Image (cartoon, rainbow, N blue to C red; front, side):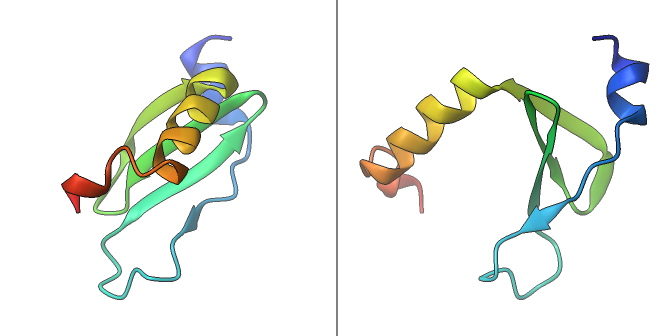
Length: 69
């Protein structure tokens, strides 16, 4: 799918309930793609396949990135 087509698919953006500053990472799903953006710069998006996203979430759940927080 081309970038223009991806942007035309409506996205419902979500952010963590732990975000209190209003400047947060936001996430949405467009088709089979998971999209991330920074709420301070909403035009810049990073896209991941469902497989890439699943691997990342599994790593989070396993604590592989705990040293970064």
